[in-house]
Image (cartoon, rainbow, N blue to C red; front, side, top):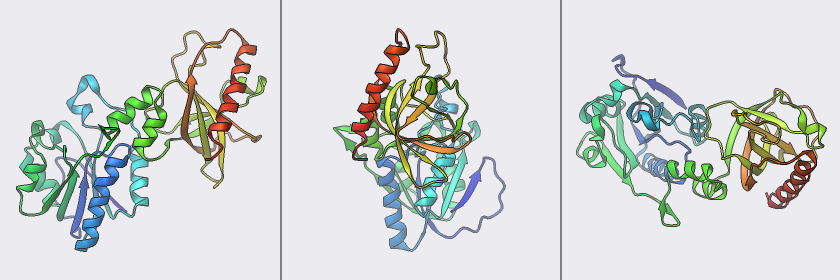
Length: 313
């Protein structure tokens, strides 16, 4: 996959791109709704003999447009999103820097610079996609252009609600992990590296791998989860129980959230290893215990619950 990182204003040299069909959107999470848009683009590209392309943006537009609601954490940080698109066999990915200058472009000028100039013949986007100054560009204004064809993809729903990145983020924040995974279309995942921790787990019989996320992920809410973990240099998947939180039994004022995974039937040092954690089931909220005995008793129950939940995974 060829990646084109574009800024405005940009140089005017021709990119000499082959004709393409492009799916346009931010695509954080690459959830089931996004898959529908990208899948429609792939079908059109195959039928018309065009290159398959995706146009996305970085950072999230809220950084420029909504200073009070800036979205600076992601379900799929840019590097991860690009990896996933490459696995799909996408030919071109246009990553457009979303800046104040870009946000101020008139819709027609945006189309000229980022659609027509890219030799795009087919545009596919969600029904609510907007672009250009004040978001005045819509699917309908795209359809008014005759240099390319435009396909608007209707929303898809789950349980009567629109599938969206916002809903997934809300579900993760509200201990609704199973629902988040349902509308995401797969278990939520976070990539990171195993780092040194407090090493308290081994002293109480439950050694843990302390995971430092590699990117600015939107983490699940504080609590205990049934998870699986993959070491990036292995094919094997390990099952475990994970605590996301501040360890209130040992810390009164700790703010930094940690991710600690206790793996079942595992006895190896993996400091420095790159890993991927997959969240499958929510078990309980994080809580403060009166002492070590109460804590270890609850961890044992959490572990047994996780074993049961992960039995068929």
